[in-house]
Amino acid sequence: MFPQVHLHLLPSTRCLFDDPIHVKVAGLGSGQVVTMRARATDERGVVFRSAAIYRADGGGELDLCRDAALCGTYEGVEPMGLLWSMRAAVPHKYFHWNKALSPHVVRFSVHDGVDVEEEERGGALAEATNERVLMGEGVTREVIDLGKCSAVLFTPPGEGPFPGVLDLSTFASEKRGSLLSNKDFVVLSVPALYDKTANVKHLELDYLEEALRVLQQHPKVGSDGLGVIGRSKAGDIALSLASFVPGVRAVVWINACSANIGAPLHYRGRQILSPLTADLTKIIPTSDGASIVKFCTSDPDGEENRTSRIPVENASAHFLFLAAEDDLNYDCRTYMESMVARLRVAGVLEPIPAIFGREVGYTLNWSPANPRTFYIICIMLCHFSLK
Image (cartoon, rainbow, N blue to C red; front, side, top):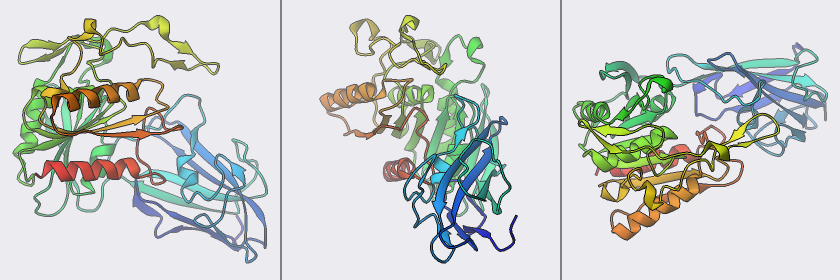
């Protein structure tokens, strides 16, 4: 490295996972062309990286909040481009970081000249390490036994009262729950699938009803009305929970189906929803080895699927629907529009639909570069859970 070149991460090299960071470089030559890089490894050992070409100003300085990337994994003025444009070194892998106690470490570096190849060819002029933590100062984490599975309770500092949120993920994950707790929510993170997929004969709402009771009885939760959030399979479970179990005041549904997917759903000892059927001959293979399964499921609004369709019109909750146009797993915009129409016909609480345009796909997680999803969720849950 070159001692006269300095790479600064402001305001600190350690921050919350969803906080923006200001990247600056000083000590370069006037108009020097450099490559900025970021590299990280997820919990499964998959390497993610990004790179972009910049030109320093006349004083030899570079400011990613001011200067435009000339080319690379992104272009233009993108202060957080090195983070949001990171791609896995192995095709068709998405970022896993689900344990709240470990910081996500990102290495930023600056290199002389144009070098956007996947592997670095030369040494760095300067580098800095960013630790991105999931739990803010004062947030506590506690494991709760629900019988069917273990849940994780995140509690913000302070006396409260705070809104209570049941955070459903298809498989166990602490990321979203810990981040919401940083924004003054008491959050119980629970997996919707409590066993390996191959072992699941049916799913149950009973243990999630118990999870709701845990939140309602928490001394820092200020209302019996709770929020529920879920994506993918956990999204349709969130709808079912609001439709069949009392106490849910707000639901955030992210890129999911309007019917019960995968396995029969049981509640209090009986089946309440059958699984929506799928036609695997409609899978579309892509040239790079992936599969598009968006059009495999049957039409949830078909009469033959009425026993799979989730009766959201029976719920006493406010609904926020988040649908991404480029989700290739679910035809989520169609499902969202169908539910909005049913809720309006039923004359219940007005739903809030939100459509995310092209280049927004299935995962639809918030990031420092695009916190829109996160703040929509926070505002909606806070507004309705405390009423």
